[in-house]
Length: 329
Ligand code: SAM
Ligand code: DTB
Ligand code: SF4
Image 1: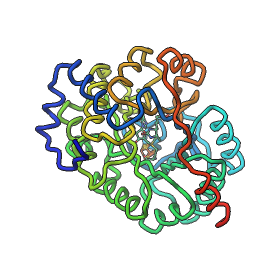
Image 2 (image 1 turned 90 degrees about the horizontal axis):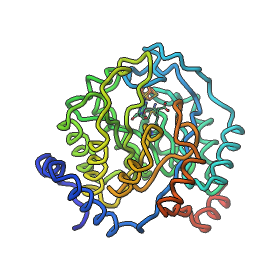
Image 3 (image 1 turned 180 degrees about the vertical axis):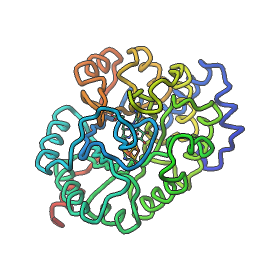
Image 4 (image 1 turned 30 degrees about the vertical axis):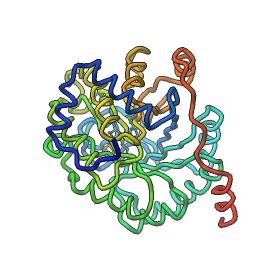
């Protein structure tokens, strides 16, 4: 079956309703038709500006609307970012994702982020940024600087969205994705589960992603990391099989997208994670820390990869691309 962008909610609902093992089996079948088996892509995250975000996302440690006791940090120096990116290369990471707690980048931030993209890419890493909303001109300048991916999540269904965020709309998010696509960058867009949403909302989220004109190349599936002080601190934990179901359905309906295990991995057992890979996940964030919360850590991940016989995907940037970049710099 080829790529489809005309999935209906009923079809997605029918996949969710399959017996768990049938669903995971089908997802692994689809996975093997579209990707090299037993291979995962590894990304590294770095927060380049932490906290004091004007947005009110109810799950987030970085929102200025809640008292999460987070240690905030102004823009960090580009030299420090490069140091971290070099370490990411040593750890086998192929993509470096830089995140800032902004509603959107201001014009005064643009020279800073553009220089960062150029320097990180020169190390042979794929580059990704998540800086909030972008206008068309900002997206184009980031693309020209060498930004490969832009991360901007839809987070949840259109219907549940306003229960989670009030400071920007679902359509604002779609507009940013449009600007990123028009600029010729790849899209990383997914969501977050365990916000007290219903299965209908998880179906709604996947429906929105799978009916975009082009599927996001990367789809991060975050599991809520409850943060004290935020309105989500006491939300009931989502059953892990439901998280795995969501990964499996995402794999089937977006067969060529990388499905990334994102936030929440630290609290999962090795067998839960193995099941998620079985369900078609083929990417994860490495390192001891995500943006502000703890992550599984390289030591534990090395053991897990070895135990499961998983190989790490090689960098995608060709020598030719890097040479062209160097000539244009
Ligand atoms: N500020 C930018 C924005 O929201 O566009 C980018 C960074 S934001 C931290 C990226 C994503 O991380 C969010 O869209 C959400 O899906 C996820 N996230 C943030 N806090 C989380 C938490 N406590 N648990 C799980 N996922 C979280
Ligand atoms: C995404 O979907 N997950 C990553 C990345 N995109 C930027 C962020 C996870 C953040 C988890 C909470 C934290 O560490 O603050
Ligand atoms: Fe700000 Fe992003 Fe956190 Fe929302 S998720 S509060 S936009 S840092």
